[in-house]
Length: 100
Image (cartoon, rainbow, N blue to C red; front, side, top):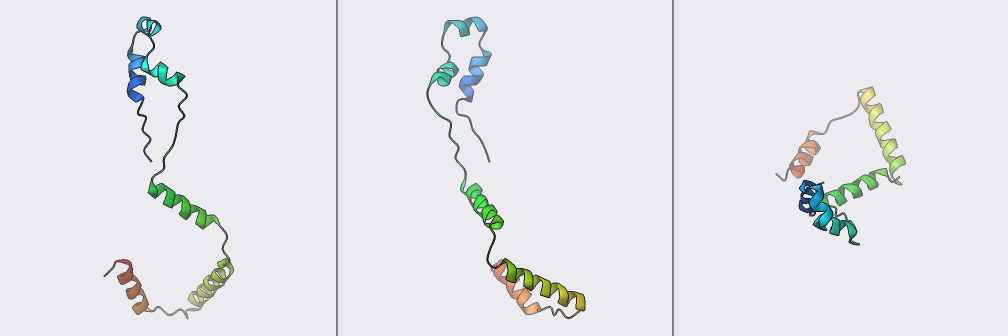
């Protein structure tokens, strides 16, 4: 995320001026500080999507118990040596994932 401060030029000028000239006149940085503007933040679409994904991952799902059962069954079949790899399904998923 990139944060930009459009008032950075005014702040830099305010600090580069001597104390005597700063005491005599109102600098742009001082006028900005005295104004009633409020700060705002804008998030990119990517950041908003990441927040949705993160919150979706944290939410409990109704399918969690069936998923846990399936994972346990897969672990058992791998441990027993009865798990059968299906190369056609793997190849199909790769082709779909890479739009081949």
